[in-house]
Structures are given as structure tokens and as C-alpha cells.
Image 1 (spheres, rainbow, N blue to C red):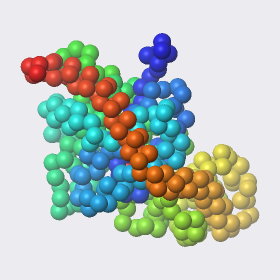
Image 2 (cartoon, protein in one colour; image 1 turned 180 degrees about the vertical axis):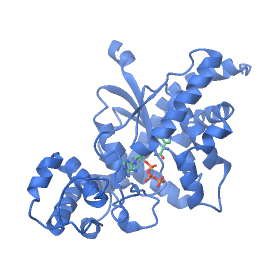
Image 3 (cartoon, rainbow, N blue to C red; image 1 turned 180 degrees about the horizontal axis):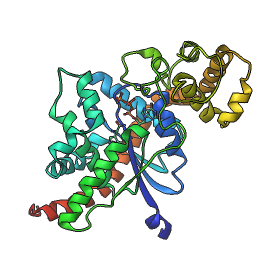
Image 4 (cartoon, protein in one colour; image 1 turned 90 degrees about the horizontal axis):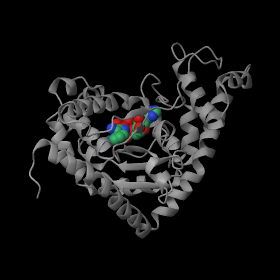
Length: 335
Ligand code: ATP
Ligand code: LTN
């Protein structure tokens, strides 16, 4: 019990905004599974963030369940990790509002994700898209998280969360733990297979740039076969001049545990064809058990329901404690 109290806490989440990609697996989820013994871990399905972009309701429901099954299939044991749906814990919306009042217009305007997403959704630049980071700050701060494991693209959001927390603590005393981002060295930024200057993203319009973790092996192999490379015909790590090949090398390094040097040697004198096929095969083999296990779990809805209900209950207990403190600090009277 003593140990339980001392464990550092982790919170992270992914939006059920599309099918999970190889990017979200390598950049985030794969690394989460290994943390369960050392940390007290909370993982969310960020459905409230997802509606900042218009969704088809039935699809959102289906993807939320599929994503929960995929979390478990990727090794997040619900006995060791608290797995929950954001909208099931009302404290997120409640603290989100309070933090909106401690977040500045100027700092939100500088967020890269806001700029990208408002360019992509020019007909729906809603207030939720703009205040996305203060809701995300609420997600993290409610749990007094020490670490937030995310891919490199989310670093800016963890930084603004720290700024908001410091601002609030500066006024009211030590209410929030200041979290640190926890970004993997390898796989932090998996790039699109067709435009390797952009990150692989599940809401990408080009389905060939993106490998989904539940995709059929033949489709995965085809996408790798078609991946954009360059005309040098030499497997060498040089992200600046050879972004396509370097991205494939990154992926292969993570799936096989080999170093860049070893990969360069393995393919010395071979064309890109062999290399791309090998990368594709290694990804297929890594994802196969995840796909099979996800499909198996999706056929047992009652089990999944049990997992998210228990998760919401555990999460709410921690979240409500923080929310209570915050309400008191800002001057709301006790009910
Ligand atoms: P969307 O397209 O809806 O913005 P996304 O594909 O970018 O979604 P997120 O749900 O934003 O994915 O990200 C889930 C997690 O996976 C985050 O921690 C994010 O940092 C990480 N991640 C997403 N894409 C990549 C990528 N290409 N490389 C590394 N990590 C990634
Ligand atoms: N913004 C994140 C998803 C997300 C998240 C969080 C990540 C929502 N709330 C809290 C870490 C902590 C994304 O787009 N990947």
C-alpha cells in the first residue's frame, strides 16, 4: 500500500477521431504498456476533444469502443491501468471551464494544432477547437499527473498545460502538480508514407500515407511497397535530404530493435524494393496479434462495458478530489 501511494502518476489520451495509426501506436500506445508496473496509469479516450471536428455520431461510438479494445490489445491491462472515456467523467468539462478563465486568447492563438486544424476545417472553426488546450490541461491536471506520455506533436499542448497550472498555482498556492511531457526517442514522429514531410495522421485525407493498426496485412504491404523514397537508391539515415527512407528506417528500427547502422548494412547493395518489403513485413508481424485480439474483444461488448464503467468510477474519484479543491480556491460555495 505504501508503494501505491508513492508511485508517480501518468495520464494520456487519444481522440477516437479515426482508426488508430501506426504513428499513434509507435509514438504513444506502445510505450504506455511498459509503464504500468512503475506508475499509476490513467488512459482516456478523448471523445470530448473529438467533437471539436464534426463527427458522425454512430461512427464516433463505434470508434470509441474499437479504440478501447485496441488499447487492451496493445497491452494495456485494465487491471493495471485505469481505462476510461473522457465524457464519462464530468469533472473534465467542469475543470475545463474554470481553466478557460485562466488561459489567454493570445497563447491559444499560437497553438500549431489549432492553426493546422482551422486551416483543414475552415467551415467550422468553433470555440471548442480554439480552447482544446485548456480542456486538455484539465484532463492532465485533474489527475495531478507527473508525466504525460505523448508523441512529439503534443509537446506544445503539455507546455501550455504547465503554463496554465503555474499561473493558477501562482494565484492560489500549490493546487496542481506541474506535469512533464514524456516523449519517446524512437518513433516520436512517424511520417506519412506518401508525403514524408508531414506526420502520419489518422485524419489525413490520403489513406495511402497512413497505416492503420487494424488494417489487413495485404493493404499494409501494398502501402509500404508504394511508400515515397528518393532517387539515390541507398538505404541511409538522413532525415533532412532523405525524409522518406529515414522514416522507413525509423519504423524498421522500432519494429526490429535494430540500430540505423545495422539497417544500413543489412540493405547495402540492395534496391529500395527489398527494403520496403522488409519494413512492411515487420510491421505486419508486429500488428497481427493486436488486430486479432482487438477483433476478439469487440465481440464481447459486455466485457468492454465493464472495463469502461469501472475505469470511469476510479477516474472520477481522483478527478473529483482535485475539482473540489479548485472550486473552493476560486470562491464557489460548497454545495
Ligand atoms: P488527428 O489526425 O485526429 O489529429 P492523430 O493521428 O494526429 O489524430 P492523435 O489522436 O492526435 O493522432 O494522437 C494520438 C497520440 O499518438 C498522441 O500522443 C500523438 O502524439 C501520437 N501520435 C499521433 N500521430 C503520431 C505520429 N505520426 N508519430 C508519432 N506519434 C504520433
Ligand atoms: N490532444 C491529444 C489527445 C489528448 C491528450 C489529453 C493527450 C486529449 N487530452 C491529455 C494527453 C493528455 C491528441 O490529439 N493526441
